[in-house]
Length: 185
Image 1: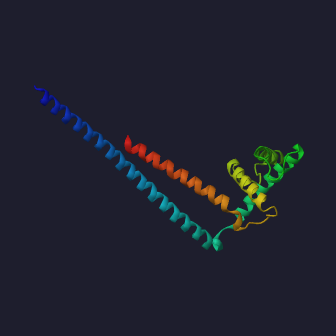
Image 2: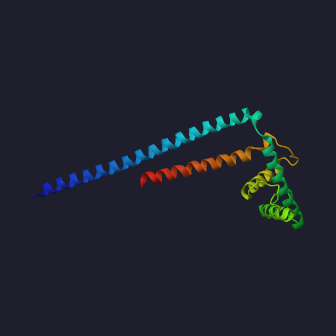
């Protein structure tokens, strides 16, 4: 084998390696472009869905059951009022009460119900701890913005709707990741 043959083989090898590197980069760019298009489509669909949902929210006012949301306001306000009392006792800022005061008031609400009702079993509160906690935090934000809020108004719902949307997005992402996991197994 001559030096010229060796040089030709090295040149072919380098060209082959360069072509392979280009193919790898092209594949990566194509995959990246596909993911970017998928993300863009998801964001567009999410935006359209949010506008559609807002439209339905406005157009469904006449069929909403207001008793449940009013009960949520009442139960949440009880916890917020108790948290404000705890804050006053401790010399801490009252509006809005701290999350620590909210947590203590939330726990005390259940302790008070058990103490008051004893073994009867009917506590007059059909809220699980997570739901009461969420409604209490919601009322904390509502009462901070609208201190005289006593009865339901649609102006109070944006934090709840945002939380609901965040939960839906987290569920959607979880299902997507789970589906990817199943497909790759």
